[in-house]
Length: 191
Image (cartoon, rainbow, N blue to C red; front, side):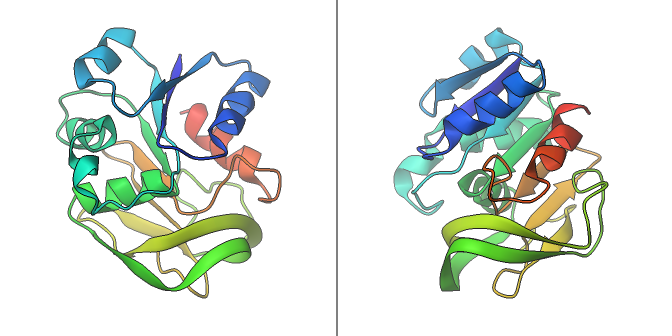
């Protein structure tokens, strides 16, 4: 079962639909659930959705996204993790990277340039269009992470730590506007 932690994105239901289209069971849960409740659900994989918040908002420290990221990174739970948009920023911030307000807010289609395909972008062309919707962005990846892609306005459009099985993208692979988004999700979901 795929567990999708909803951080308030308007696209969270599309992540679940993509899972269903791949014949995978998925459940959407709120971001205020406890880490123990997540472990009790025994998920095969976890996805952190996007959302409108900032990683610097005080309440984000208390939400489960930060706790899951730390638990996976520290090896306390061994579950592959994917962060999308705000989920990507949660991973960056809570694992020691740097998240800042971008020079330009991005909303719409952006050209993504793949620097290295890694696991997450395997089979994706060197350039593709993706749907972006964010103000903050990762300007410095956390230690142990490799940046896989960038755009003209964002240094880290995708990154991964394959050893820890933590993957993330700043753009939205779950929406139809993103070229090869289904393949990116498949690369994670079929790990």
